[in-house]
Length: 139
Length: 400
Image (cartoon, rainbow over all chains, first blue to last red):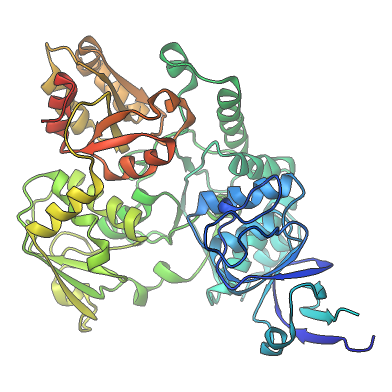
């Protein structure tokens, strides 16, 4: 399709999804996300008040101790409010483990071009299995 | 990452879906940290909890036909049968705890329900490759025993138990285990409790592997537990050295692997006093006493029993320890002494549990800064003192 761009990435957790992008400048602790709405509750966070539910979430890294991070993501997942996929820069044991066991596609090592082109609200196809992301700009 | 033929078969599902999923997790973690291969683990400790996500994952592995290749020891939740007799326990909390125990039992875990596996039930030897989770445990086995583990999560250590494998990176490798920060201790460490404060000075010590000099050579097991627990709780450290005491530091030079320290830090009495003021509430009236984060050793149970013998406690007192120590306390008469004073010895139980909801908003006394830190999220507030001062406060109802 016209205007589409496909970039390389590295698969951490498998799967292929299409969804709307939400970009965070800050690291994310899923414990500080409201499980009922998917909204980020953390004060001063760049996504405070925005919902991660069903989004392709682009953020630098996870943070926080293991139990609260895993449980935070789990509480979102059982309510259907987890992100559809996660695109990160710096993986850690907790996030890697959580994504695989909760079957959420997770990729890192994305071509820097992606970060130049991507905007909130863009639609992307995250194909972790083929290790590529396709950006479909808003019409 | 290189996989053996057996590991590749495991990943491909030849030995069942649970092993395939668990190995997938470990390979992904290994690739993130540049591991070249997997190693066999001989021991695992899982900091299991009755948190919903943990129970869900254990049950998921079970449904996939999971069974641990290496039987892990596990952390405490709370003792439903004992505490139901003394406290009001919600049906939901009791059920979740029982579900967790059932799932881990069926996965083949050894239900030790203790957070001090390095003292009993799961004691590694020098150089052994492990996958241990739990704050006080990882740093103790690395530093004091010289066995090798990364700071694993509940899930990654459970995956290691299911597969018998762990990715080779971090603290499993020689080069990452050497000291990097020289900590000159000028403070006068008089009691085991002072090591809680020393271990809490992590903002001053900064990141790395600290090497402590200026400490006595005859420090107790409890002092070593306290130091490691606080280093890991407040600063996520995996390892420390004390030349002449810990096994990978026969000398100062050996502790640093022949390299120069990246930093030299001095800790004084003022540093300890300052951190103590910062983490403890001011003295005053208390409502309860809580000990055992991590679980009390037998000699700590003994110390409390000697201090309360023939007396009556003014406030409720909870001593959390392993089931072995409770049994030993029973056999040696300590249990009777503590119960006659009005205290409880509880096995299989952690301070960070919903069973303590009646203590919300109340003020307690504890010898454990880790207890104070975690229980603050459940609305408990603590004055922090050494064990003897805590017991004295529990007898009077007040910290003077």
